Amino acid sequence: MALRKIRTKEDEVLRKKSKVVKAIDDRTRVLIRDMLDTMYDANGVGLAAPQIGILKRIIVIDIGQGPIVLINPEIMKQKGEVEAQEGCLSIPGEQGLVVRPKYVKVKGLNENGEEFLIEGEDLLARALCHEIDHLEGILYTDKVRK
Image (cartoon, rainbow, N blue to C red; front, side, top):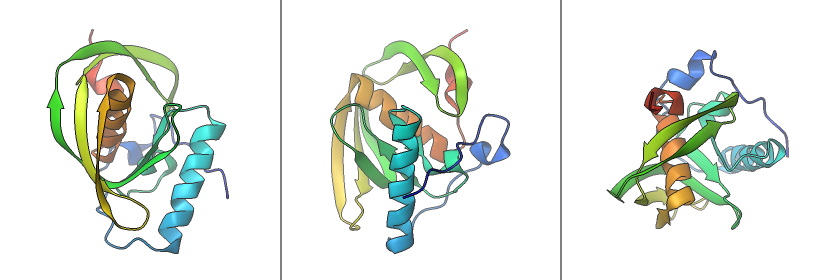
């Protein structure tokens, strides 16, 4: 597959809302592979399609337990609060304290178009929320505690 250029905070594409994926085809699967390759190459734990300039509702995550692919993800439930340091591949060299839910339940589609639920706590919950925010044009810096 191919490595894609990660857009940085100056790029206005990061502030736009992503479109719902209506059909999962071979081009979508290539995009997902490229996203995973790009995320791993950059030593990230998550990547959203807008970060590589594609305004589609697709995220990939790997917190060390294998890749997670979510198409059209939606947060269904969240509980608790945790404040922790957060960074972003689109904002290299910066970090900030962000409050995120301790637990989330997210609904989405896999690469075969099958709906599934994923539950995450702590780092996985944080990664899911962070990447889903990207699909809405929100950066973690918008939520940093001063």
